[in-house]
Length: 318
Image 1: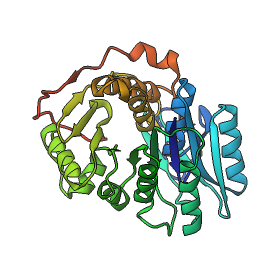
Image 2: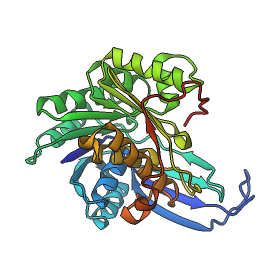
Image 3: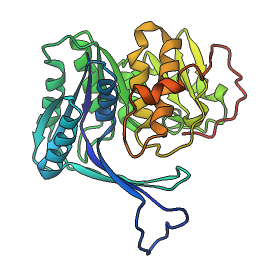
């Protein structure tokens, strides 16, 4: 069982725009509109569940928006453990043009109390099922202590679960210091940890090793269309990504993490190959839609994994 914790879930509205019609102050009639239940941890759990892996989403839900999120998750038959909170759940808006260029407007969310934070972690670690991975993801609502994800890591350790964290800034650094098993930064988030630019694959690998030295066990660096790097104390791997026509990048990194976790027990190379296929499949889908097997299968076997990559490879970021 893979259990995810999302302290700041969202309703994700996506508008697909006609070519050349995005302009400030104008009126735009989208080609298509969709609404998904979102938040990084929610997306990871959705992707796993839709592909037959046992997963559970633990999340806060507030007011009318929270009920809408829950309704959407019930339609996908996702095992959900909500913690009802006083504030409203956030609403995010994504604008996507025909070339896949994405503009996101992400709400901050409503504050949740320290007691609600502790209750959220408690919901995850008191599951009657055995928890193999506890995955804490996403932004924190206003006023929430930056150590929330580190607290989740400690909670996972207390029940013998492996832990993963996907977040940014100080919360990510604190999760590293707490000894998290896996972090999944993109290039920008890794830059924030080491406080310097990362221009090529060699610099990314060096920075990931520095994150390991801080305390995390391993690092999965997502690099968008340029693939991903995996670094631990003893291993380095680089995987290329399949080329797909982008429709929306929303949730692609979450789908990639889900794919990685789905095959982690088969070895790092197998996990990386699955991560690349799941992430690419998500890029080709609208909004925050998570891929299913028919979307993923054509993209398997395209990526290549090596433990001796070209360190001079220039990286644009993610």
